[in-house]
Image (cartoon, rainbow, N blue to C red; front, side, top):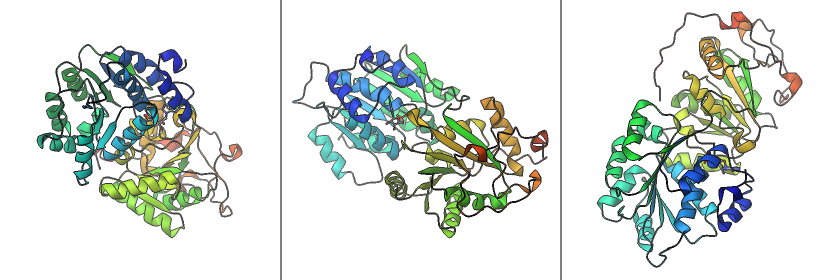
Length: 423
Ligand code: AMP
């Protein structure tokens, strides 16, 4: 399937060629025809599947169809997204895909003065990309009217719920025209989200991609058994490997993320943390340093990482294993995106063996174990070896022993950790 076969117009096809996209991803292949037919859509897809283009491309096309009223630009499409980072990324996508069209888009979010946003609104906008709080604020001040909205997109609905924006979303929806096309995207569909979708959509077509239990085929996954106290040394050891271009390291807690960054600095590895306790500016700065390659390691909690869109992420490292197995799939899905190869390393200490068991059950396979790393777990019986500094442990097939962990690795240790949300 090609983009041309999806009946996209030439200016969009040209922009896609510039972007280097050769073929649509599954969510694009399924969603674009539905949206072009002006139908409502319920999309179950996470970040990394190409879902932004799945809605941005047909929206650009629908808004380009005659009659186009360029003399009087009014907001015809609203895209509601939970975070500033996501809003900026969506804005960048509209800019890239719509570069040959004469449509104007604007991104608005809180935490910054409103002056520039208000001026841009006065100048005329076709597509508004907004976070809920600032949108309602500017609507209350009468700078924004939703009365001409033809297409409404709710992005990352489950995350909206997570972040406590559900009432703001409902308030916004109540102010939309009844007659409209609605597109609803969520990575997961718990009952509360399904209920919300039912109140927004009319006879929607459903699109579901990459069920959460199937880990991307192109990602090489490895487990490294290690004692908790040695995790930081193992991480520094791995990150000093020259073959790692850009690594995203996951910790369970915000405090843990800060600690990892500090410890890496001591070991001479520059890294920055991104999590909910950081200001938006600090998060944005860390992200852009990471994108430009100024720092090659970003340490994140799960919630913070969900908004990160990086094309060339070579490695994901689970410093801590997640307690919710589905989270593992989301995490490692951050590498190997849009056809690229990726490597995911997961550290597993004694207390995390049950978590690993649950992950392997979910993905339906045993993850290969790296045995010959310099900090083997004391329970593993492996004799500790001292490798020369910077010795490569990654991407070298003979360094990876595809051993199924022996049964004793999975013995229940009687240490049932409380399953609580620590973010
Ligand atoms: P998203 O799921 O929208 O966050 O997109 C994930 C990444 O995939 C983005 O960085 C896009 O630039 C990229 N992408 C989206 N569609 C395609 C495609 N058809 N071919 C190659 N890359 C794509």
